[in-house]
Image (cartoon, rainbow, N blue to C red):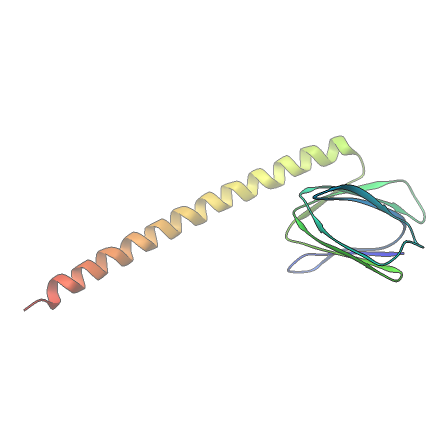
Length: 131
């Protein structure tokens, strides 16, 4: 099977695999090469896969969609972080999501300032527009 993990900006992973394990709202599932075509809405969690050559690998994914069609497994998600060991992955996820939280706080602060400035200017426009 060919596993592709797609992020909004790029292809995160494109690899031949023997097995994929992921989690949907109703629980975990496993896909093998001869599995029937399948689609699932993923919840944030750990997706594991077994490369044709190598040991099991792990990817932390945000919510997304998984579609198995023939020999392809496509996963579309907003965020993904990879790791060979679960301990490493946990630390990486914490670091990445902490950074994303900080960026989100900065963006919210900037948006709040823009909204306040817009409201102030709108109020001034109304004040000066009166006869």
